Length: 248
Image (cartoon, rainbow, N blue to C red; front, top):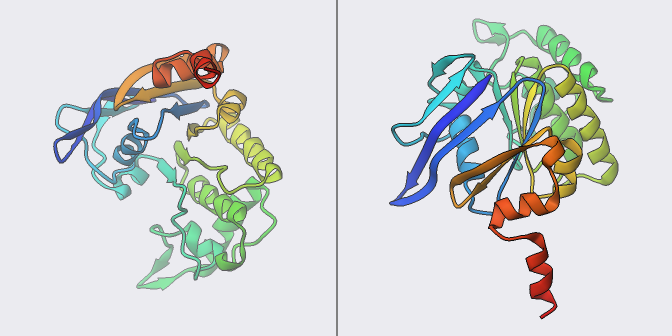
C-alpha cells in the first residue's frame, strides 16, 4: 500500500538517512527498530510531512507517487502520527481535540452537536469510558492516547504510526492498548510501531524493519523474529557477545 524508496536526509552535512526503503501493507503491525540515532525518528518525520527528504527519494501509495510536503498533506493521504509527546490541547474538550484541524462548522461557527456525535462514534468504537465533552485536562496519559487514536479513526486514517506508545502506561493500560491495536489491525489499518522493547515487538509485530546508522539493514517476518536476530541487525553483533563481555 505504501512504499518509501531510497529515502535520504542530510542535516548540516551529516547523513541521518542513507537510501532507506520501507514498505507498509494494510492489516499489519510493522515494527521499526534501531538504536538511538539509527534514523527512525527522521524517517517518520518525513512520512509525517514534518521535514523533507533529500532529492532522489520517493513515496508511493497504491501504485502512485505522492508528495508529502506538510503534516496536512500527510493527513490527506490517511497518515496519522502519535508521538511520545502527545499533540493535544489540554484546554479543549475531547471532541474539539478529535476534530483539531478538521473542525465542522459554517461561517466561523463550530457545529458542536455534529462534532460531538462524530467524536462519540469514534470513542465508542474504541471502548472509551468518557464522553466527547470531557475536558482533556482531566484525562490520564492512557486516556489521552486513546483520544489520539480516536482522532485517527475519525479521520479514516489508513496508516497509524505509534512512537514508543507504552512509555508512560501501566501494565493494565498496555494490555488494553495491545488489544486495541489488534482490533485496528483486524480492521485493515496499517500500524507502524516504534519501540525499543523486544517483548512488545515479539508480541505484536507481523514484520520488523531494522535501521542502523541511518541505513536499512533488513526486514524479518513474524516467524523469524527473535532477540538474537534483531540485536544482530541493530548492532552488528550477536546477543551472546554482550553477555561474554559482561563476564570478562
